[in-house]
Amino acid sequence: MLTGDANIAHARWSIRYRITDPVAFITNIADPTSQQSLLETADHAVRVASQRGVVATVAQVTADQLQRGLGSAQFATAQRHTQRALDALNSGIEIEQISLLEAIFPLSVRDDFQEVNRAEADRARAIEEAASERDKVIGETAGEASEALLRRVEQYEIASQGADQAKIDAL
View (cartoon, rainbow, N blue to C red):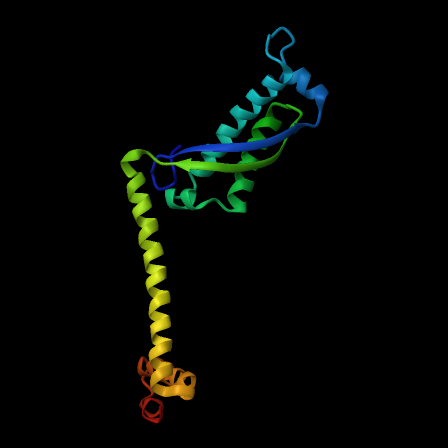
């Protein structure tokens, strides 16, 4: 598939469906002269329709969004596209759920995606460690007054960005 930011991705999807109108299904989808079972025929129809719906949905998201996992809105979009394709055939098939099992990126870019994930995890860890160190230093320095002092410093920083010199002097 091609993502909205022009990256290539491979994915495995799971689609749960049911035949809600057997007469429409047999009349418009199933071929009584075929060696294919009715289940194989239904699977094929759903597969073709869902490929269209999934490709249209993935084309609207970035590779990063796909890797991190799609939201309910994207799954609803894929389901809507797929259902429209089946309804156009008067298939008698109803899509109940579409879910993404796995998104895989080509080897040439896979390491880059993993490096971004590692960098974001390192960033979150560094922020947490810095906040912990800040709390420790302020606690050791100001004791019980540390929270009030920290609030006052933050107020001063905000005031310093403005033009109210009297407020800055007061803080």
